[in-house]
Length: 366
Image 1: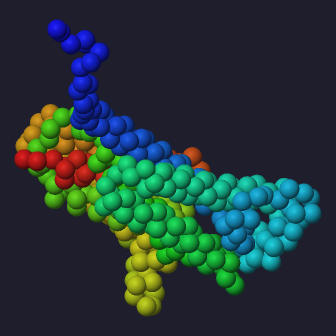
Image 2: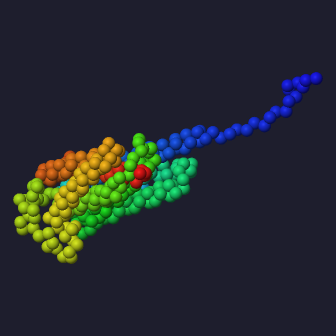
Image 3: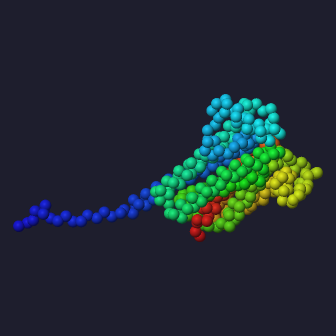
């Protein structure tokens, strides 16, 4: 007699983990992290441009207090505006440079500085929120999460340096921030920006397999780019761009007549406060950087014509050539707002490309 089919013992059912499904989930998580980091990088780029506008409009010292939380709210009444204006009127910049400024003019510079700080707060919140999600869901290996945490500390340090910079301009006799501290503020912004771009690039699958020629040269090109940005910060801080507004020579000479490159003591102060030496160093740095970028592009094109590295190096050389031309225009026109902002923005675009170039070559295999 045949057993009824209902009497058969059910076989144990096993559910196998589908590896492609897991890999797809991991890829989706990494893609989300990548989009978050590129968003942060874009916000920092905008922040650098807004910071440049804040500096060029003379707005950076309009808010004389550092209130990371309560300072997020702007003045909301006439009494509050008068209170903020009174604080500014006690500052050296107002007394020595802007005496007699109207409340309307004060509001103009106040809004620039407030917007700059508000954008900084927003970047901090976007980064913190993204990091907490990455850590809570364990989207990345713990080592990469630790790197992200360190990058967050760098962002917090950048905010603190921003206030130290502002505080330097509120000291007796000062009408602007100290050039060294402005340069530190700009350089640390570049460091955080570069770290975000590098991390996002490592999470972005390359379009093609690349040979690794030119790694050392790419690293040197990145270091020279950072150095040139720092020299640009000193030019901005010392307002050296408003002097010797001729090119290719400085007022008709390699070293302007009547200017001494090492007149101040101690010796190191010449590199910060001597506007002739500060501008001279920035000019020479630009020539060296451009020459090295062109050499790097030509060497990669000879070694691996058509490769991703050669194309990026060529693009970098072209961007630096455009940056040099824009720098000349900015100088000759005595730093109009549009040119100063474009020059600073293109510098960070070049920095991003240099970081991507290094990251791709470092991650490639011969």
